[in-house]
Image (tube, rainbow, N blue to C red; front, top):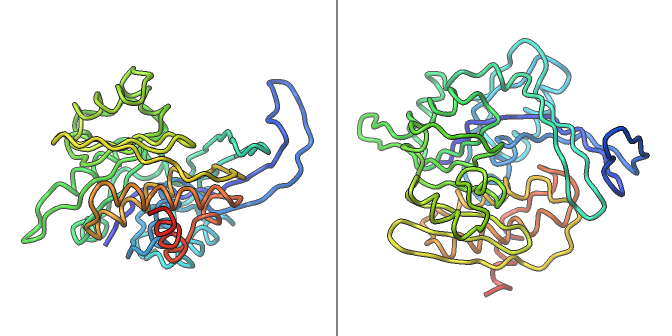
Length: 302
């Protein structure tokens, strides 16, 4: 099983030809309300990619809360670990340009109320083979979940922690000590390491954690491990419609591939195929591909 301890946001998405400059008012061509949040996105991506997934997080008691819970459940995600807290759910205001690029403002809402996993969350994490984490929850909550995953409960060893360090902020040593795989994009890798070249950043990340994947958008993804493996997986050529949540799709699919025992090269190819399929459609959770489509694209690429 894969556990995801993270954020759930309602995405308020405006589609425009070009994002407005400071002080500028423009007319958009469309608007959609789409369930999202990096945690919920990764849970849905992993479930659609074939994983058995439990989401651990919080929604508010507002009108968005039931919709977020329903979106997770509709994708086959176990939502028994989703709690409802007083106040608004998390939201993300997203502007998507016609070329697929986007800019995002996240307002945490209920996500900010989480200070760490509950006792029930701890049991779920203890039964999991992988724990997906991001940084849209308070850092203390993320660190607490990571430490739980590294603990030993009875005869069950902890889950492998796969961290997407977004938004990019300095990472506590206590968190890094529990991470098995870190999956930043090119920008996040540069922020974390101070190195603009992705290959240099990859090497710097491996001084912090055992394995790292740096996603490069249209240029593919880099993988490295402390045992000397270095890989570059080219991106699948696609016309991007909306890149929102492509990284979350990659991370969710990567977790599925690793829990199924695929080696680094095959896991990277599987995750890259899932991400490529996601950018062909608008939206975050609504764009994420199902397992048969991912497998078909992987076969076509080999």
